[in-house]
Image (cartoon, rainbow, N blue to C red; front, side):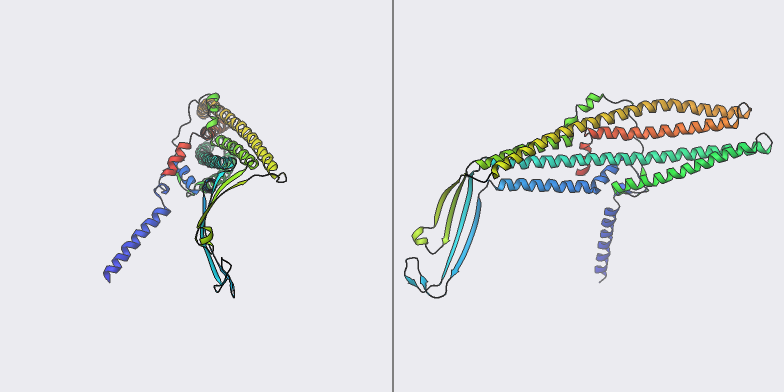
Amino acid sequence: MQGHIKFLRRNLMCLAFLFSSLLFPTYLRADQSLTLKDCFKAALKRSEVLATQQELVIQAEENYHRAWAAILPAINGSYSYFHQSGSGFSGSGNTSSSSGQQTLGLSADQPLFRGFSDFAAVHEEKSFIKAQEQARQWAGMQLYRDVASAFYGRLSIQKDLNVLDNELGLYQKRIKELQSRLNIGRSRITEVLTDQAAQAILKAQREQVVGQWEVSKEVLSFLTGLDQDIQLDDTDDVPSNIGTLDSYQAQVNARPDIIAAQKNVDAYASNVSVAKGGYLPAVDLISDYYGDRPDRAANGAWDVEIAVTLPIFTGGTISSKVKTAESLKRQSEIQYSQVKRLALEDIRSLYHNLKADLSQMAALEEAFDISERNYKANAQDYEYNLVTNLDVLQALTAYQDTQRSLEKIRYQAKIDVNLLEASVAHQLSLMEDLENQ
């Protein structure tokens, strides 16, 4: 009995360990900082869009299998039993006391010619498979863009909170100094009140940013399924320079959405051949084998037939199908042109946004350095009554506002560089590696 209890305890411990491993994988530990790659990996496992797109791929593959099945022979078995009350007639015409007859056989139908529409249908479905696969990859790139925006957006707001807390600390230090000066008659009460009012306004701004931070945590958690309080690893640097616009636009044809649109054009072109095949005759080889039938002795056990069907008049059905197929092909070509044009515009916009970010960041770095030195100089001059408290307050505000703007544009540049890289599908290999892990 004790042995059974130990066995059950050991198995329960194993099950508990496995259960905890499923619920809390190693990359979800609260004490571990997660990179953008980690968050993207979690989002890939969670995304309903990708899961739905995968089902569309499976459906396209099954359509392809059905198209192949139309080329292969169809073999069917049949059995029938006929019963008639009273006497009947045998196969020779004599009266028979038997009132039951059975037929058992196999029939095979091999399509020989369908106006080449069957092979065109296979090619059509194969193109649709490629289109759905590429659509799934592009959905992955869109997911990467969303995760990168949420990842760096949350880091940006978190950094903004740190800057605000530092600024509030400077205000508190400044207020204490002014109160000390007030006690010895070197400052006026209005100076203290001015700084306290500015500090109160800054606290209100901080509360607004706290609300934005909570929203940013919710967005990232929604995309990844990770806990809202996870720590993020902010180690990626902003690139000092990027390639030319032409070098990015030259990669547009490698985008999955472009390839998917091209595969749709190929599929609808094959569909035109499928429709035109309706004008041509259909040839089938039909064979039957009977294991048992009433007239087997007279008519034999098997037969072979070649059947030719030529459409003569179908009320314009075939012509309508051809015109519809040609219209769908033209529509797919228009959509391909639109997708490519939008892709080029997407790349251009993201490229110019990133270039502007880098230029603005360089200018703000210089402005931040100057504003920091200006604030420190004003604070020192105030000790010697060379400047007013308002001058110090303005210098402090300019210093902290410049720092906040610098940090915001730095993270915006990180977002834009990832969006630009995703716009030319540079993360496809990363996506494949993460899905294979």
